[in-house]
Length: 458
Figure 1 (cartoon, rainbow, N blue to C red):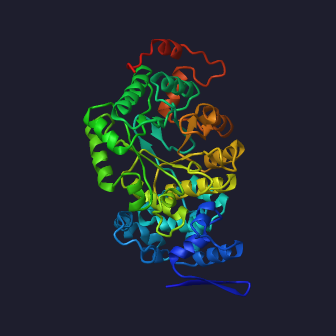
Figure 2: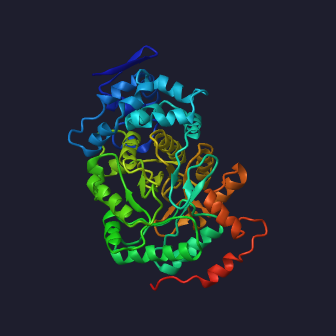
Figure 3: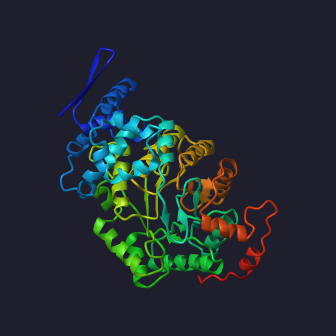
């Protein structure tokens, strides 16, 4: 089956829906690297016009030639025909109009989430401008809960990321406390370990647990080691709150991360067995990022934005507490500059929310990208307007372990002050009880608690 469009008397042909999706994608370096992108803006426009006329139902039959791929099978199994029925007769363009219509509410959009495939979400994103992506995402509320309630409308949560280049316990604690005194950490206090050894994983969890319990913080913590290390730590009865894993949009790409769906199934059962969370709490945390499948040569000829959306099928299988795209982390080979990073961040957030995920974004860039902190300010403000569930914050916006630039604790405070986005209600109450964020904030009683804080032995 082929697709075609006429622009100014020139006929453009696209051999398959996979090709059409790639050609319709806004410009980015990763698709150029994979020789998948449009030859120029006119072919891209032709592809977008053509894509707008494709029925949504076509995505149930003509998407990928990936026989035997576990993620493709998962996408097919997840599709709910009853949820799809309200939009089943629409084209991609008409679906965009329906999403943007003032009378279409976020609650209505939420009811069709399991009727949509990731490819449908990616397709409609490709024909939307930035304000469209923001407007629709802002309608959708995806709420998750553990010790704090994340994703409530009008609020912005943060991950407090106290990474340390040697996983030093006191270095991690000092960074975490720095963030807490700035009101960061209601989504999670999450550490990317420098190593993936089981003893270090358990020590990090024990240190974060000491901070949480001794300061009585209504949040959750996570050591972002590999899922197999988390399973071993759970087996040792370590204080693990959340199981983390990076995931991607194909079985081969996930194999590159050393993970399978069966492994994630086991991890979800294991973390529930610890009984650390209230009944019905969300217990998994996933990270994704455009370019992950391409960098692993596991994209099967599909553009990176669509492959990213497919990763969300893996994430939503587990009804996670948190999902975030690490939007600029993979580097300029995949998102070349600030403009591409901004666009990708808005796309990822939109697609994740459309598919029913509690979507956050690590607003970030590598030091060899054509991007800077002003680009991150723009993306942060746009995502706050779009109702992003959470963002990642690090001391001074400079992650000294992962060697990339993210947001500072102060950046989240800027959004709280200018757009009126308080943290999770439980965390906001804790902040108020300790005078955090007040104009004349004094450390006591938090200061007294800090003085008494005791960490496990290194």
